[in-house]
Amino acid sequence: MITNKPNIFDTLLPEGDILTDQQVEIIKSNGKVISFQKKDVIFRQGTITSHVMFLESGLVKLFREGRNERSLIIKIAKPGEFIGLVSMYGNEIYHYSATAVEDAKVFFIDFKIFNSILLENGNYAIYLLKEIANDNLGIFDRIISQYHKQLPGKIADIILYFSTHIYNSETFEFPITRNELAELAGTTKESFIRTLAEFKNDKIIEIQGKLIKINSIDIIKTLSRLG
Image 1 (cartoon, helix red, strand yellow):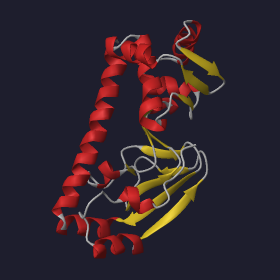
Image 2 (cartoon, rainbow, N blue to C red):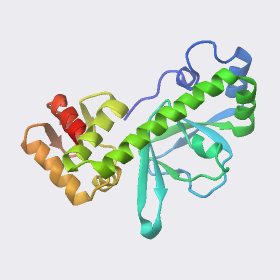
Image 3 (tube, rainbow, N blue to C red):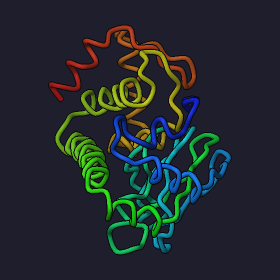
Image 4 (cartoon, helix red, strand yellow):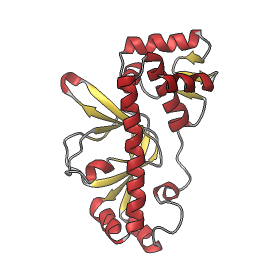
């Protein structure tokens, strides 16, 4: 599990004096932390948006629901990230769903209050635009990986995603099922498990249940780069 930082506002608010003390107090006084247990639904695709949500602790799966109970995992959100922000400024309908991968705490801010701060503080609005842009670029890169890379490259990307983006460690546990990992990689469960076993047999990684230990991060990066 990823632990939250001592103060949620250390990550919710950017470094520097982008927000005034008064604006910080407005956000604090108009927000509320809500706890979710593992597998709880935070918001559902197709429902009306109402609050800006910021992940304080835990991990959250964002996914697009399709037909026949099939879904496409968009990303795994970690502490310090906004969730659902794109839909807030879209057409006021959530275009994907969010569920807690592990016990999580989410800071809810009234959208009208949050939007009023953006309207009067262009620097903070630009900061959020950069955050959204970087987030979307990461999603684009992963989608390109799904469609253009061979299996070893896809699986290497998933290992790097959790190692560098989520946990910042070369030893970690996959927080989602093998089936969900396959969805994230854009392959089948059987192909994902087989390729993971090949990585293990080649001594690139060690596997014990959900626990993954990377023995050679350089090989994983090479496989990711070569695709």
